[in-house]
Length: 65
Image (cartoon, rainbow, N blue to C red; front, side, top):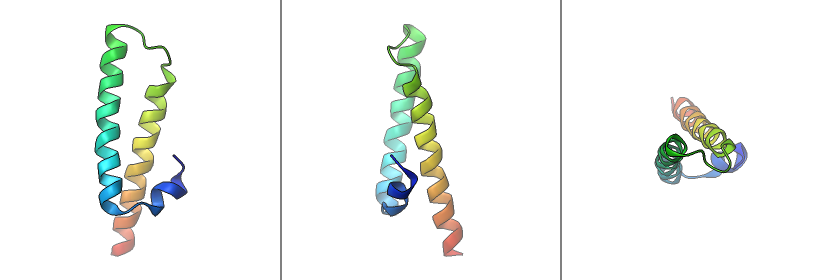
């Protein structure tokens, strides 16, 4: 998901996506700890998406003030 797409999301949608992605990351890390997952780059992409979502939320918060 690109940053422009994330910026266009509503606040509630962004928060829901962030919660879902955090849960997904937790599951990926657990699965990778038990046995190596097929594509470990999915962990990296998940972390990057979480960072983008948090950045967009922070930018929206600072714009309000």
